[in-house]
Amino acid sequence: MKFKIIALLLALCLQAPAFCAIGMVNYNEIVTNYPKAKTAYREIDDRATNLQSFLLDKEKEFKRLDTPVAKKAFEEKTAKEFAQRQEALAKFKAQKEKEISDDIDKVIKAVALESKLDTVVDFRVIYFGGTDITDKVIKSLNTKK
Image (cartoon, rainbow, N blue to C red; front, top):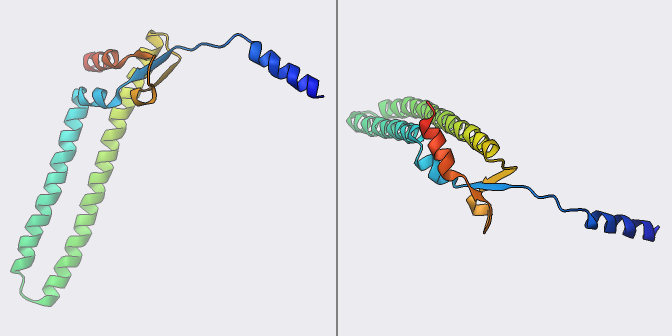
């Protein structure tokens, strides 16, 4: 029985190694050079700034209130409204990030097929070797309309 297991292991080891073409991308560089991503992150920042402005305005309103009862009611109302706006911002951010990620993933897959690559990984995973397709992906994203 031991002989059969050893023979099987040797047979597997002596098989011709399977080679696969590996590509790599710098995802952060792609996002940085993708105009749609820049626009989306600018929109997210604008909405976050609006949320901060909302809070500052409400703080000024709060300081003008006289009675503790009015202040308590105002705090509760403002907290609910702030939570709703914060949740809306989080959903908007998640949606935009998903759109960007989906666009980039599609282009990476297309460039990988075009370049006859079997696997594509982030550049931080590979110490040496592999084909860098970052520039091709950026070019493809920027020419895609």
